[in-house]
Image (tube, rainbow, N blue to C red):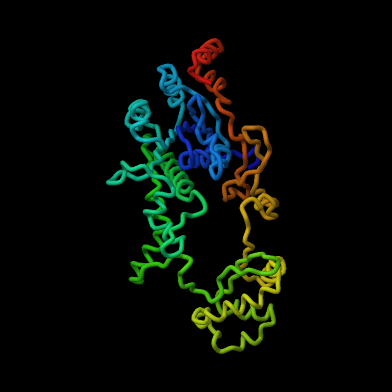
Length: 394
Protein backbone atom coordinates (compact mmCIF):
# COMPACT_ATOMS: atom_id res chain seq x y z
CA UNK A 1 0.00 0.00 0.00
CA UNK A 2 1.12 3.59 -0.44
CA UNK A 3 3.42 5.01 2.21
CA UNK A 4 0.87 7.72 3.12
CA UNK A 5 -1.87 5.22 3.92
CA UNK A 6 -1.72 3.70 7.40
CA UNK A 7 -1.79 -0.08 7.49
CA UNK A 8 -4.45 -1.76 9.68
CA UNK A 9 -2.03 -3.02 12.36
CA UNK A 10 0.28 -0.01 12.42
CA UNK A 11 1.35 0.66 16.01
CA UNK A 12 1.01 -2.98 17.09
CA UNK A 13 4.24 -4.64 18.24
CA UNK A 14 4.72 -8.39 17.96
CA UNK A 15 7.60 -10.28 19.56
CA UNK A 16 7.95 -13.75 18.12
CA UNK A 17 9.88 -16.86 19.10
CA UNK A 18 9.33 -18.94 16.00
CA UNK A 19 11.02 -21.16 13.46
CA UNK A 20 10.16 -23.28 10.44
CA UNK A 21 6.77 -22.33 8.88
CA UNK A 22 3.72 -22.20 11.17
CA UNK A 23 4.84 -19.57 13.68
CA UNK A 24 6.70 -17.45 11.10
CA UNK A 25 3.58 -17.42 8.89
CA UNK A 26 1.59 -15.85 11.72
CA UNK A 27 4.21 -13.12 12.16
CA UNK A 28 4.49 -12.58 8.41
CA UNK A 29 0.73 -12.09 8.13
CA UNK A 30 0.65 -9.61 11.01
CA UNK A 31 3.74 -7.86 9.62
CA UNK A 32 2.27 -7.57 6.14
CA UNK A 33 -0.79 -5.97 7.75
CA UNK A 34 1.41 -3.31 9.33
CA UNK A 35 2.51 -4.65 12.72
CA UNK A 36 6.10 -4.22 13.85
CA UNK A 37 7.29 -7.83 14.16
CA UNK A 38 10.49 -8.53 16.09
CA UNK A 39 11.97 -11.98 15.56
CA UNK A 40 13.97 -13.17 18.58
CA UNK A 41 16.63 -15.59 17.37
CA UNK A 42 19.32 -17.64 19.10
CA UNK A 43 22.90 -16.54 18.51
CA UNK A 44 23.27 -19.29 15.90
CA UNK A 45 20.16 -17.99 14.13
CA UNK A 46 16.86 -19.58 13.19
CA UNK A 47 17.79 -23.04 11.87
CA UNK A 48 15.40 -22.41 8.97
CA UNK A 49 17.99 -20.01 7.53
CA UNK A 50 20.20 -22.99 6.64
CA UNK A 51 17.69 -25.47 5.22
CA UNK A 52 18.30 -27.04 1.82
CA UNK A 53 15.99 -28.49 -0.81
CA UNK A 54 12.28 -27.88 -0.35
CA UNK A 55 13.00 -25.91 2.84
CA UNK A 56 15.33 -23.40 1.20
CA UNK A 57 12.51 -20.92 0.60
CA UNK A 58 11.06 -21.02 4.12
CA UNK A 59 13.14 -18.29 5.71
CA UNK A 60 12.91 -15.56 3.03
CA UNK A 61 9.19 -16.10 2.43
CA UNK A 62 7.89 -16.28 5.98
CA UNK A 63 10.21 -13.75 7.61
CA UNK A 64 9.71 -10.65 5.49
CA UNK A 65 8.49 -7.46 7.15
CA UNK A 66 10.30 -8.42 10.37
CA UNK A 67 13.23 -7.24 12.46
CA UNK A 68 15.82 -9.60 13.93
CA UNK A 69 17.42 -9.51 17.37
CA UNK A 70 19.84 -12.33 18.29
CA UNK A 71 19.98 -13.09 22.03
CA UNK A 72 21.34 -15.85 24.25
CA UNK A 73 18.18 -16.77 26.16
CA UNK A 74 20.11 -19.11 28.44
CA UNK A 75 21.93 -16.18 30.04
CA UNK A 76 20.31 -14.01 32.74
CA UNK A 77 21.15 -10.85 30.82
CA UNK A 78 19.63 -12.31 27.67
CA UNK A 79 16.38 -13.14 29.43
CA UNK A 80 16.36 -9.66 30.95
CA UNK A 81 16.61 -8.14 27.47
CA UNK A 82 13.78 -10.30 26.16
CA UNK A 83 11.50 -9.51 29.10
CA UNK A 84 12.10 -5.79 28.56
CA UNK A 85 11.23 -6.27 24.90
CA UNK A 86 8.07 -8.22 25.71
CA UNK A 87 7.03 -5.44 28.09
CA UNK A 88 6.71 -3.20 25.01
CA UNK A 89 4.71 -5.76 23.01
CA UNK A 90 1.04 -6.23 22.28
CA UNK A 91 1.46 -9.80 21.04
CA UNK A 92 3.89 -12.62 21.73
CA UNK A 93 3.90 -15.47 19.21
CA UNK A 94 5.70 -18.81 19.56
CA UNK A 95 5.80 -22.31 18.11
CA UNK A 96 8.22 -24.17 20.39
CA UNK A 97 7.43 -27.02 22.77
CA UNK A 98 5.42 -25.93 25.78
CA UNK A 99 8.10 -27.10 28.21
CA UNK A 100 10.74 -25.08 26.34
CA UNK A 101 8.83 -21.84 26.86
CA UNK A 102 8.05 -22.76 30.49
CA UNK A 103 11.73 -23.37 31.32
CA UNK A 104 12.56 -19.94 29.92
CA UNK A 105 9.71 -18.30 31.80
CA UNK A 106 8.22 -17.22 28.49
CA UNK A 107 4.99 -19.20 28.60
CA UNK A 108 1.62 -17.48 28.80
CA UNK A 109 1.08 -18.24 32.51
CA UNK A 110 4.33 -16.47 33.38
CA UNK A 111 4.05 -13.51 31.03
CA UNK A 112 0.36 -12.77 31.66
CA UNK A 113 1.21 -12.14 35.33
CA UNK A 114 3.50 -9.33 34.19
CA UNK A 115 1.00 -7.81 31.74
CA UNK A 116 -2.67 -8.76 31.70
CA UNK A 117 -3.11 -6.96 28.35
CA UNK A 118 -0.67 -9.29 26.58
CA UNK A 119 -1.97 -11.46 23.76
CA UNK A 120 -0.08 -14.74 23.47
CA UNK A 121 -0.32 -16.83 20.30
CA UNK A 122 0.77 -20.44 20.68
CA UNK A 123 1.23 -22.63 17.59
CA UNK A 124 1.32 -26.34 18.33
CA UNK A 125 0.88 -29.74 16.71
CA UNK A 126 -2.37 -30.45 18.56
CA UNK A 127 -4.75 -28.47 20.70
CA UNK A 128 -4.87 -29.67 24.34
CA UNK A 129 -6.05 -33.27 24.53
CA UNK A 130 -4.93 -36.90 24.21
CA UNK A 131 -2.52 -36.16 21.36
CA UNK A 132 -0.91 -32.98 22.65
CA UNK A 133 2.23 -34.78 23.85
CA UNK A 134 3.04 -35.98 20.33
CA UNK A 135 5.50 -34.33 17.99
CA UNK A 136 3.67 -33.20 14.87
CA UNK A 137 4.76 -32.17 11.41
CA UNK A 138 2.66 -31.09 8.44
CA UNK A 139 3.13 -34.50 6.85
CA UNK A 140 2.25 -36.30 10.10
CA UNK A 141 -1.13 -34.62 10.43
CA UNK A 142 -1.84 -34.97 6.70
CA UNK A 143 -1.41 -38.72 7.08
CA UNK A 144 -3.45 -39.11 10.28
CA UNK A 145 -6.00 -36.48 9.34
CA UNK A 146 -7.22 -37.88 6.02
CA UNK A 147 -5.69 -35.28 3.70
CA UNK A 148 -2.95 -37.57 2.33
CA UNK A 149 -5.61 -40.24 1.75
CA UNK A 150 -7.71 -37.78 -0.25
CA UNK A 151 -4.76 -36.46 -2.27
CA UNK A 152 -3.22 -39.81 -3.24
CA UNK A 153 -4.53 -42.76 -5.18
CA UNK A 154 -6.07 -45.70 -3.27
CA UNK A 155 -3.38 -47.41 -1.25
CA UNK A 156 -0.89 -44.64 -2.03
CA UNK A 157 -1.40 -41.72 0.42
CA UNK A 158 0.32 -38.56 -0.79
CA UNK A 159 0.97 -35.32 1.07
CA UNK A 160 -0.20 -32.11 -0.55
CA UNK A 161 2.46 -30.26 -2.53
CA UNK A 162 2.74 -27.38 -0.06
CA UNK A 163 3.01 -26.87 3.70
CA UNK A 164 -0.74 -26.36 3.81
CA UNK A 165 -1.32 -27.00 7.50
CA UNK A 166 1.69 -25.00 8.65
CA UNK A 167 0.71 -22.03 6.50
CA UNK A 168 -3.00 -22.12 7.30
CA UNK A 169 -2.30 -22.83 10.96
CA UNK A 170 -0.15 -19.71 11.12
CA UNK A 171 -2.85 -17.71 9.40
CA UNK A 172 -5.45 -18.94 11.89
CA UNK A 173 -3.05 -17.88 14.64
CA UNK A 174 -3.00 -14.42 13.10
CA UNK A 175 -6.80 -14.36 12.83
CA UNK A 176 -7.03 -15.31 16.49
CA UNK A 177 -4.54 -12.59 17.42
CA UNK A 178 -6.56 -9.95 15.58
CA UNK A 179 -9.77 -11.16 17.23
CA UNK A 180 -8.02 -10.93 20.63
CA UNK A 181 -6.90 -7.37 19.83
CA UNK A 182 -10.49 -6.38 19.12
CA UNK A 183 -11.71 -8.02 22.30
CA UNK A 184 -8.98 -6.31 24.32
CA UNK A 185 -10.41 -2.96 23.22
CA UNK A 186 -13.61 -3.93 25.02
CA UNK A 187 -12.24 -5.74 28.08
CA UNK A 188 -8.78 -4.25 28.54
CA UNK A 189 -7.39 -7.77 28.90
CA UNK A 190 -5.34 -10.02 26.66
CA UNK A 191 -5.65 -13.77 26.28
CA UNK A 192 -3.96 -16.87 24.93
CA UNK A 193 -4.72 -17.88 21.36
CA UNK A 194 -3.96 -21.44 20.27
CA UNK A 195 -3.69 -22.81 16.76
CA UNK A 196 -2.69 -26.36 15.85
CA UNK A 197 -1.65 -28.41 12.82
CA UNK A 198 -3.96 -31.36 13.43
CA UNK A 199 -7.09 -29.31 13.98
CA UNK A 200 -6.23 -27.23 10.94
CA UNK A 201 -5.99 -30.40 8.85
CA UNK A 202 -9.36 -31.57 10.14
CA UNK A 203 -10.84 -28.26 8.99
CA UNK A 204 -9.36 -28.88 5.53
CA UNK A 205 -10.98 -32.32 5.20
CA UNK A 206 -14.24 -31.28 6.87
CA UNK A 207 -15.98 -31.12 3.49
CA UNK A 208 -15.26 -34.83 2.99
CA UNK A 209 -16.40 -35.66 6.52
CA UNK A 210 -19.65 -33.82 5.88
CA UNK A 211 -20.05 -35.52 2.51
CA UNK A 212 -20.19 -38.81 4.43
CA UNK A 213 -22.57 -37.32 7.01
CA UNK A 214 -24.95 -36.20 4.28
CA UNK A 215 -24.73 -39.12 1.84
CA UNK A 216 -23.63 -42.04 4.03
CA UNK A 217 -20.92 -42.80 1.48
CA UNK A 218 -17.21 -42.39 2.15
CA UNK A 219 -15.42 -39.85 -0.01
CA UNK A 220 -13.16 -41.37 -2.65
CA UNK A 221 -9.60 -40.07 -3.02
CA UNK A 222 -9.51 -37.15 -5.43
CA UNK A 223 -7.81 -39.11 -8.27
CA UNK A 224 -10.54 -41.76 -8.06
CA UNK A 225 -13.55 -39.61 -7.29
CA UNK A 226 -16.57 -39.61 -9.54
CA UNK A 227 -16.46 -36.15 -11.03
CA UNK A 228 -19.76 -34.28 -11.07
CA UNK A 229 -18.77 -32.92 -14.49
CA UNK A 230 -18.48 -34.75 -17.79
CA UNK A 231 -15.26 -33.00 -18.83
CA UNK A 232 -12.94 -32.07 -15.99
CA UNK A 233 -9.49 -33.42 -16.81
CA UNK A 234 -5.85 -32.86 -17.65
CA UNK A 235 -5.16 -33.38 -21.34
CA UNK A 236 -1.78 -34.15 -22.92
CA UNK A 237 -1.60 -32.17 -26.14
CA UNK A 238 0.78 -31.21 -28.92
CA UNK A 239 4.49 -30.55 -28.16
CA UNK A 240 4.36 -32.72 -24.98
CA UNK A 241 2.37 -30.03 -23.13
CA UNK A 242 -0.45 -30.47 -20.67
CA UNK A 243 -3.54 -28.41 -19.92
CA UNK A 244 -6.53 -28.76 -17.62
CA UNK A 245 -9.85 -28.30 -19.42
CA UNK A 246 -13.32 -28.15 -17.92
CA UNK A 247 -16.76 -28.12 -19.49
CA UNK A 248 -19.33 -27.89 -16.70
CA UNK A 249 -23.03 -27.67 -17.39
CA UNK A 250 -25.05 -28.03 -20.56
CA UNK A 251 -24.57 -24.43 -21.67
CA UNK A 252 -20.81 -24.84 -21.62
CA UNK A 253 -21.11 -28.12 -23.54
CA UNK A 254 -22.91 -26.25 -26.32
CA UNK A 255 -20.25 -23.52 -26.27
CA UNK A 256 -17.45 -26.10 -26.38
CA UNK A 257 -18.92 -28.03 -29.30
CA UNK A 258 -19.48 -24.83 -31.27
CA UNK A 259 -15.96 -23.53 -30.55
CA UNK A 260 -14.38 -26.70 -31.95
CA UNK A 261 -17.03 -27.50 -34.59
CA UNK A 262 -17.94 -30.76 -32.91
CA UNK A 263 -21.48 -30.84 -34.27
CA UNK A 264 -21.48 -34.64 -34.23
CA UNK A 265 -20.83 -34.76 -30.50
CA UNK A 266 -23.43 -32.10 -29.76
CA UNK A 267 -26.00 -34.12 -31.71
CA UNK A 268 -25.09 -37.42 -30.05
CA UNK A 269 -28.00 -38.39 -27.77
CA UNK A 270 -25.64 -40.30 -25.46
CA UNK A 271 -24.09 -37.02 -24.22
CA UNK A 272 -27.00 -34.57 -24.24
CA UNK A 273 -26.92 -33.69 -20.54
CA UNK A 274 -24.10 -33.31 -18.06
CA UNK A 275 -25.14 -36.47 -16.25
CA UNK A 276 -25.14 -38.29 -19.57
CA UNK A 277 -21.60 -37.12 -20.16
CA UNK A 278 -20.50 -38.23 -16.68
CA UNK A 279 -21.82 -41.73 -17.43
CA UNK A 280 -20.16 -41.66 -20.87
CA UNK A 281 -16.71 -40.66 -19.64
CA UNK A 282 -15.25 -44.11 -20.39
CA UNK A 283 -15.49 -43.43 -24.13
CA UNK A 284 -16.02 -39.66 -24.27
CA UNK A 285 -12.74 -38.64 -22.60
CA UNK A 286 -10.54 -40.89 -24.83
CA UNK A 287 -12.37 -39.49 -27.85
CA UNK A 288 -11.71 -35.92 -26.75
CA UNK A 289 -8.09 -36.71 -25.93
CA UNK A 290 -7.61 -37.87 -29.51
CA UNK A 291 -9.34 -34.84 -31.01
CA UNK A 292 -7.63 -32.23 -28.83
CA UNK A 293 -4.15 -33.73 -29.24
CA UNK A 294 -3.78 -31.88 -32.55
CA UNK A 295 -3.70 -28.52 -30.71
CA UNK A 296 -0.92 -27.08 -28.59
CA UNK A 297 -1.49 -25.59 -25.16
CA UNK A 298 -1.47 -21.97 -26.38
CA UNK A 299 -4.08 -22.68 -29.04
CA UNK A 300 -6.40 -24.40 -26.58
CA UNK A 301 -5.89 -21.66 -23.99
CA UNK A 302 -6.77 -18.97 -26.53
CA UNK A 303 -9.88 -20.75 -27.72
CA UNK A 304 -11.15 -21.58 -24.23
CA UNK A 305 -10.46 -18.02 -23.03
CA UNK A 306 -12.25 -16.49 -26.03
CA UNK A 307 -15.49 -18.35 -25.30
CA UNK A 308 -15.24 -18.18 -21.50
CA UNK A 309 -14.60 -21.83 -20.70
CA UNK A 310 -12.47 -22.85 -17.68
CA UNK A 311 -8.89 -23.88 -18.48
CA UNK A 312 -5.48 -23.94 -16.82
CA UNK A 313 -2.05 -24.60 -18.34
CA UNK A 314 -0.10 -27.00 -16.11
CA UNK A 315 2.59 -24.75 -14.66
CA UNK A 316 5.74 -25.41 -12.63
CA UNK A 317 6.09 -23.04 -9.64
CA UNK A 318 9.31 -21.42 -10.92
CA UNK A 319 7.51 -20.21 -14.03
CA UNK A 320 5.11 -18.12 -11.94
CA UNK A 321 7.77 -15.43 -11.57
CA UNK A 322 6.99 -14.59 -15.22
CA UNK A 323 3.20 -14.87 -14.96
CA UNK A 324 1.76 -11.77 -16.69
CA UNK A 325 -1.18 -11.46 -14.30
CA UNK A 326 1.06 -11.50 -11.23
CA UNK A 327 3.49 -9.09 -12.85
CA UNK A 328 0.87 -6.59 -14.00
CA UNK A 329 -1.25 -6.63 -10.83
CA UNK A 330 1.58 -6.24 -8.33
CA UNK A 331 1.25 -9.74 -6.95
CA UNK A 332 5.03 -10.05 -6.74
CA UNK A 333 7.25 -7.62 -4.84
CA UNK A 334 11.01 -7.04 -5.26
CA UNK A 335 12.98 -8.58 -2.39
CA UNK A 336 16.61 -8.74 -1.34
CA UNK A 337 17.61 -12.08 0.14
CA UNK A 338 19.84 -12.12 3.25
CA UNK A 339 22.81 -13.02 1.02
CA UNK A 340 22.26 -9.92 -1.10
CA UNK A 341 20.69 -11.54 -4.17
CA UNK A 342 17.63 -9.91 -5.70
CA UNK A 343 14.38 -11.78 -6.32
CA UNK A 344 10.62 -11.36 -6.13
CA UNK A 345 8.19 -12.71 -3.55
CA UNK A 346 4.43 -13.38 -3.68
CA UNK A 347 2.35 -11.10 -1.46
CA UNK A 348 -0.68 -11.91 0.67
CA UNK A 349 -3.56 -12.78 -1.68
CA UNK A 350 -5.78 -9.86 -0.68
CA UNK A 351 -6.26 -6.20 -1.49
CA UNK A 352 -7.28 -3.48 0.96
CA UNK A 353 -8.98 -0.49 -0.62
CA UNK A 354 -7.81 -1.80 -3.99
CA UNK A 355 -4.14 -2.08 -3.04
CA UNK A 356 -1.85 -5.01 -2.27
CA UNK A 357 0.00 -5.21 1.04
CA UNK A 358 3.61 -4.66 0.04
CA UNK A 359 7.08 -5.32 1.33
CA UNK A 360 8.42 -2.83 3.90
CA UNK A 361 11.34 -4.88 5.20
CA UNK A 362 13.38 -7.55 3.45
CA UNK A 363 13.91 -10.78 5.44
CA UNK A 364 16.46 -9.65 8.02
CA UNK A 365 20.04 -10.72 8.40
CA UNK A 366 20.74 -12.44 11.71
CA UNK A 367 20.74 -9.81 14.46
CA UNK A 368 20.35 -7.00 11.95
CA UNK A 369 18.30 -4.88 14.34
CA UNK A 370 19.84 -5.96 17.64
CA UNK A 371 21.64 -2.70 18.42
CA UNK A 372 18.78 -0.41 17.45
CA UNK A 373 16.30 -2.41 19.53
CA UNK A 374 18.60 -2.49 22.55
CA UNK A 375 19.03 1.26 22.40
CA UNK A 376 15.25 1.70 22.11
CA UNK A 377 14.94 -0.31 25.35
CA UNK A 378 17.24 2.12 27.15
CA UNK A 379 20.62 0.40 26.83
CA UNK A 380 23.47 2.85 26.34
CA UNK A 381 26.00 2.50 23.55
CA UNK A 382 28.55 1.29 26.11
CA UNK A 383 26.15 -1.31 27.50
CA UNK A 384 25.38 -2.55 24.01
CA UNK A 385 29.07 -2.93 23.28
CA UNK A 386 29.54 -4.84 26.55
CA UNK A 387 26.65 -7.19 25.76
CA UNK A 388 28.27 -8.01 22.45
CA UNK A 389 31.62 -8.60 24.12
CA UNK A 390 30.04 -10.93 26.67
CA UNK A 391 28.35 -12.96 23.94
CA UNK A 392 24.86 -12.14 25.18
CA UNK A 393 23.74 -10.70 21.84
CA UNK A 394 24.86 -10.76 18.24
